[in-house]
Structure formats: C-alpha cells, structure tokens
Length: 403
Image (cartoon, rainbow, N blue to C red; front, side, top):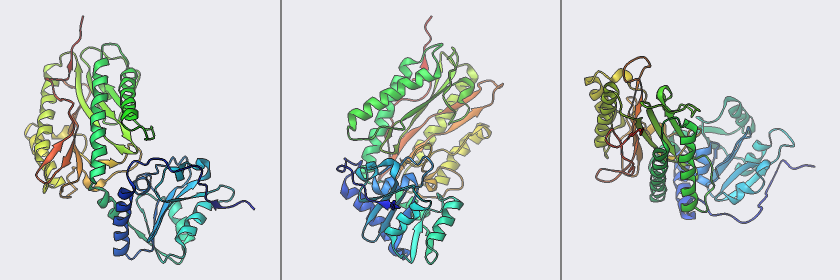
C-alpha cells in the first residue's frame, strides 16, 4: 500500500540562514506563547512563519505546507514533489506527504501533533477550505488563532536578523548604483531593471555563498508608469524629461530589503521640482520622527500636517512606512508595524522600519507622476540608524542628458 507520508532525509543538512541557537531562541519564544495560551501544538502554514521558525522557504504551487511545533519538537510538513530538499533546508525534523490520496497533508500533521487538545494556527493565512479541513482533522480539539501574537514577536528583530538586513540595504544600494549608471534616453525599462537585478544577485552570491538564490527583483518605472508603487516593469523607452522611479529589492533567504528613489532624465520642470522637493521634505520630517517611544500614528500625523500645509495631502498614495524582516511582495507582512493613522504601535529598539512618503500627481496636471523616497531605519536605544546610503533628492538624482 502506498504511504500517506514518510521521512525522506536525502543528504546532509545544508547551511541555514541563521545559527541553530537563533532558531532555538525563536522556538523558545513561540513556546512561551504556547504556554500562555495553554497550547499543546502549533501548526504554521504561511511561507513567512515557516521560514522564520525553521529556515525552510517553501514553493507551494497549489500544495499545502506546514510546520508543527510542539513542546519538545519542530517538524516541517512538505510535499513529495520537493523530495529531500525541505529536510536539508530546515531546522528540526521533516515529514514528507504523498499525493496518492486526498488529505495526506492533514494525516501527516495529525501524526506529529497526536491527540492535541488545543492547537494554535494562523487565521490570517488559512483559507476557509483549509480551516474546514483542519476542523475535520481535529474535531475534538480547540483551534486557537495565534497569528497576532507571532506577528508581534517577529516585529522585534534579533541581532542576527539586523545584521542580515544591513547586508540587504547595502546590496540594494549596489543595485541602485548600477541602475543609475545605465539610465539613458531610449533605453527600455526592462533593460534598466535587469542591470540592477543582476548586480544585486551577483553580490548576494558573493556575500552569502550558502544562500538560496531567488526572488531578487527590480521595479524600474518611467513617466505615467511611476504613478503606483508596485507597477510592473514594461518595455517603454525612456524619454528626456521623464520622471523615473528606481525600486531595488534584494532578497536574502526570504528577508526583504528595499531602495526606492525618484529620479529625472534631464532637468525637471518647475512643477515637478516643486513636488519632488516637497516629498523630500516630508521624507526628512519622517526620518527625524522615527525614534523609540514614537507611535506609528503619531509619525503619520506629523507628515500629514506638513502635506496638508502644502495642500498636498490629497495626493498621498499610501502609508509612510512598514516593518522589515522575513517578507516579500507575495508573502508576509507585519501589519502591526505600518506607519498609518490606524496603527498605534510604539516603536522600540530592535524594530526595523522604512520611511517612504509618496505623492502621485495625476496625468494631465503639471508635474504629473509618482514621487517616492525610501530609507530603512533600525530603532536603537537612543534613536534610529539609517542604513540606506544611496542619496536622494534633486541634488543627486537628475541624470544628465548628453547631446
């Protein structure tokens, strides 16, 4: 009979993003949450939390993945399509489930949890279908949402995480330099983006030879395409006078960092320069406000006050910053640490946040386009350290057009 699940430890463990002591410390903190909530086990299902607690960053492709943490162990649950790779790249044990029968994932989970009376899960990640399957698998267990608790725990970074984030910021700056160097009239957005991506991936491979290489990307936008922060790269050819948006994102073992800058190809017109300078001023107000003891909503209010005084608040695009860590553009978010009116979280040492105000001036108005600057700050005991070094503003980022 074909098995529902089995152990496939194919080859030795590889070097993980962090030390065993780091993963043990994270699991110990999770078990403190478990003790406080009287949980017998926790089932993690999101990419970011599985990676945070085990080091394994899965590729779902329509299949469920998990990590079961009990009072004494930690076991990733992976699909057989990945063979032994999940075990090689995880801290703790691994159990592989097969697709010979439906529901094998849940059989594997149940094998690890046993008859747990109270199980923690991520309510902000499970679909309705997955939650019904979990209820059917554990009909006699209480299922407790722990997503807010573990998100709060992830918001304060360890020294090892901060070290990796520093490298990410440094590598983003390298990508920014290579992007800026190739900007010229008539080059395509995609060609500029590829130059920055290649530079960052080469540096990641040099600095982190044991890393897995995936997900590093660049969004480089021009003209109308700058109006949104997450607009895709196109094949548009750059034209003299264009507003440009440089966005470099090196990904190191699931950890996201970013560099974002406004540039112009040639001298900006008077209206564009005015909006750009105003956004830079807002950026600097925000940078000065980030410190331990400040609240996310309080920082937001200071920048809003400035924009309102300049009659620009209606052009604000989104919140002014967010947390960093194990997240990406398609997974993860520490929503409790975003610089918005509705978030009252108090900044404390060990948190890492961005400052990134953005104004979007609609097409058809003088100065149309999206203006955004983005720096990364590490909260310290006495203030905040800006770890982004690429310069911002009109003094540095007007690309000269030669005849």
